[in-house]
Length: 100
Image 1 (cartoon, rainbow, N blue to C red):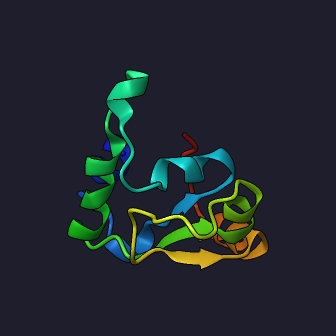
Image 2 (tube, one colour):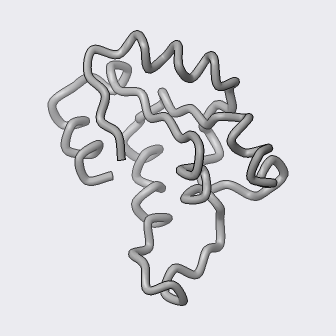
């Protein structure tokens, strides 16, 4: 998230796309208690995505379904749930990809 927010300072918001797929979708579950796992609270940071007007945000529908999260409450309310093929299309069009 730090790299994404730093990049947003140097790029137009519509030039950045954020994609959540595979196990990355677990990070989007609302009301997590990260302190029980001794993890950093990423939820607060994800809320900055909408604050920074980063509107190109995609969540893989298949990844949600495969992990039983298709009906889970997610932190990013404005993110688009798209098919894996659409998500890979977005990634394929990217000039640079940062994977975390």
